[in-house]
Image (tube, rainbow, N blue to C red; front, side, top):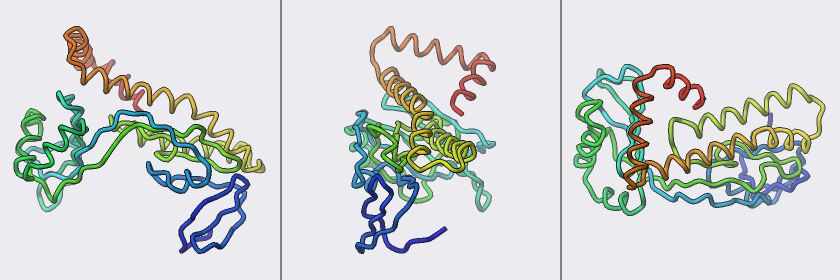
Length: 259
């Protein structure tokens, strides 16, 4: 495996890699896994399609008063889903990572708050599930949305992970989609060890296409349902959540579907 010190400017569908210094390298198969921005992928001919749902996510690490026992906590607030994800204890203090997805206007208002005020707000809207909260360092605000590439395979080029499909953060589904992409790639390489790069790219893209579209659709639906102020939708939402909470088999099924 060759490690390049130069950045990649673009790659043509035949696998010719052009570095930022103008040097070119011929490749048989190129994988793009560069995150949501997909800068090099777009420069190489991939077409990014905006899936909407433009929001901002509050992300940070918090000390929490109560132990999390390795369990993630998620609640659907009026503004958007809030998750407190378990982190290893450090120096005898319990820690969680927060991800709170919010509409842009709500995020801009909260961004004006001090970290202490913001931590108190998080403790309140999370119903004190982890007790009092305190930020370890200043949180960050990350723009989020949904997007997909018009096609994930272009010649011998293949895009995977967030480069190919960005979805709203919920239950770790985005990460699970990326892991599944890698598994599909691994299986394709094992099944067709002598296949040309363009065949490998098409095989993986075809196998993963339906999963990508289905999860993106479901995430959009979740966002619409949990932000709706229609009484019947709110009633149906509450009944569904209560039913899932009371029946371990349903919770297990949801966890299995989430990967």
